[in-house]
Amino acid sequence: MRRLLVLIFALPLCAALKYSTRVVRTKYGPIRGVLVQHPPVEVFLGVPYATPPLGSLRYMPPVTPSMWRTIRVADTFSPVCPQRSPHIGNRSEALLELPRGRVNYLERLLPLLVNQSEDCLYLNIYVPRSGAIDQ
Image 1 (cartoon, rainbow, N blue to C red):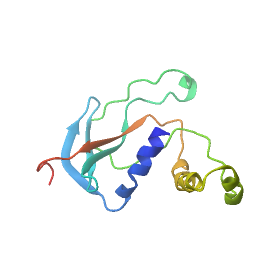
Image 2: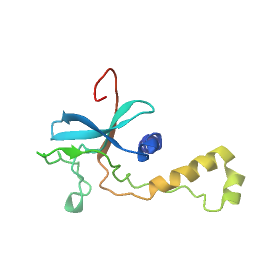
Image 3: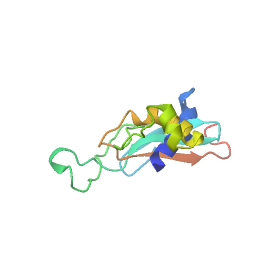
């Protein structure tokens, strides 16, 4: 749920992307983010923190991600982890059980649940911008 709230917070990103001039060196390789004006933050989307345990490793702990040498542009949301979608297909029935505000919130949330995958070990990082950096 926390990841979904982060996604909702970042929806204004979709407008016009302005890429940061700063390259951040991580333990696994360099990344470049995007700049957002409201609030003024530098955003790094879809940064891997582990390699997903897929296939025969499915129920095993994740392993360290592979290192990369070239700059990874971190401008795209990665899939969300699999989760059950809220049952609000019939709005009238949903309003009998849930407050209107909750139904409205869930309706806005549904499009974000479309791209789900077990390969979901990525971070969306928001860093405040201050001073004249990247301006």
